[in-house]
Length: 185
Image (cartoon, rainbow, N blue to C red):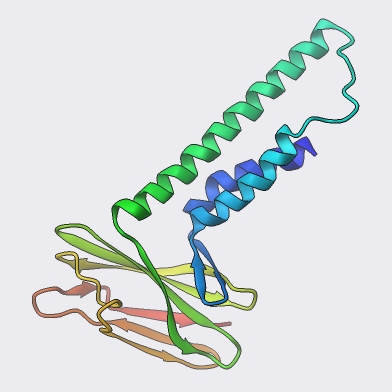
């Protein structure tokens, strides 16, 4: 149980940075949200006391237990900091996640994440397959904090095998790269 908990906390610490999203009933759960769920389960496995705690036999065994407690504490802090940084980034840059309304016949969908600040904007493209898990497949940059997806300036051509997403900028707020391949296989 403790090993599973440590593995879960490690996965929770990296989940915000793996470029994953989850789509549940049309709502997007960002990578840091997945990290929160993983961390909660892992922390229960790590910190829930065992019912039959065996007392330490010698000093060496007690020293090993102390090291394991420090490892559990350090991994917990690392996961919380990692998830917190990712969530703070989404809040600071006012990230907006959108499931685009087009869907392939096999259920393949496209999710975008747009961020902006005063002078620049950007976005990520995720391809969501089967169980609703999506992987980041591309990124773009937009000038002057433009949000072309929010403004409806995109063209999505999606079929059985995939297609393309073109994010359309303007002459004064260009987007680069504008073209993104969508692979639904």
